[in-house]
Image (tube, rainbow, N blue to C red; front, side, top):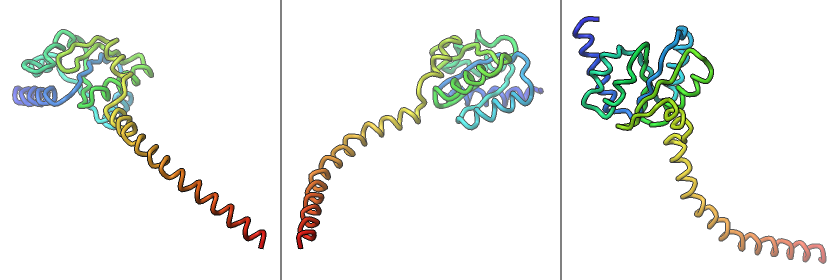
Length: 173
């Protein structure tokens, strides 16, 4: 990798650090190409990315961003999982790490807050932004639905009484 490529990689990583909500650092303990491809596919599906970068270049890229706190975690064969949704990358990495012993969660950061491996696992357990939005919409819509049901109930009861009365009159005739 020549100097221009390194510079481009650093600027790309810096741009990523400025745009994401979470960075999860993993240690590759001999994953196969198939496992790595499966992980990257799951990351893309969740709206996250998984990138192997030289530790030195990642440290340089993190300088001046909220993620400068991760510099001490970048040792050995590491990779960076990132996502704008603070939960997506953590959830995919955590779920994938449960299926193989060749991927270890080292830690990460959310904004300027440094997280250890247990912090990342706890973050993975939280609902995603989309799930939270769906719950909020459900809470907002529920009273309106109940109100519509309550206001329609008396009219439905009246209609049933009238229908029963009409049926009785037809039987009597």
